[in-house]
Image (tube, rainbow, N blue to C red; front, side):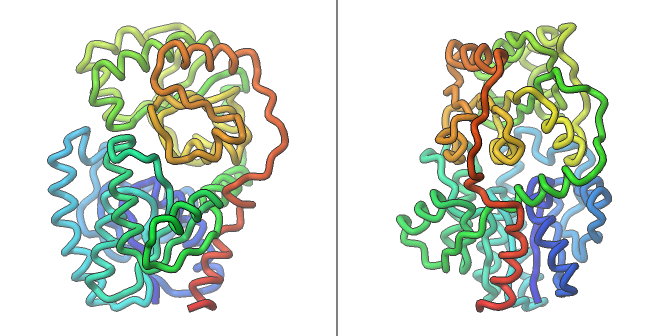
Length: 358
């Protein structure tokens, strides 16, 4: 049997293709939800079953921690024994977890103590700084250190793992986010915004907790001449109000809305001119959708988009960011390229490996 341990919406979005492939092949698995985020809309949108185990009641708001680091660390420390005890009871052959969250790091440690083989989806990403992004870079290091199977998403992440002397078996399978985007694009369009708009997504902890950084981000976003659509996270909204920046966003060309479902967000992103973001996965989605992406952060663990030339790392420098926006406003010619994250069938490879290779 297989146990899948997930806590956040992003984890479920990227693990969803694996779960659907397991269902397709009628392979049994346990679905364990840590409760870090509420997952209801994604379960419904992609016809996934409800979790078999819920370790903590998920929050009603989009973030359990709302920028409170002490609360996040407390959750992490109490989560490890919870997962450990459950895995010891279930005794799965594999415990699968995804990415760089507190839930993933807890699952990696717990799976080792429980004596099952930890499988880290999206292994090997590195920004080179434990503070950018924080605490995700630390979570990645923990996951890769304690996992028995490391599923790299690209040539670069495979190289990172091989240079890091990890004990787990390293396998390059591509990134399941490409599968998720493919699945979304097969669904009917779910917005009426047209195509002449820019999409914004800002939620990084190190950005929104800093008044100086958030003020820069507001300055950059308000410099965009095109219509702007911003699905706004609860914690970002809270910080904008706290730092007195909310009024600066009241502009005719800026539409602030509630966070959208993943399928709707991908539908919107697929029709946008470009994106202005500080997140991680959206950089991968920009490659899958062949959309330019301006990164309002100092470092990125997704180097592949920079090499291709449609992701632009600004270092949170105002002049550099505004110059990138000026270029994007004029239209970026996206040359043909092979997606370094795979062809949208990574889930099939992963299930093949787990059922046939070990």
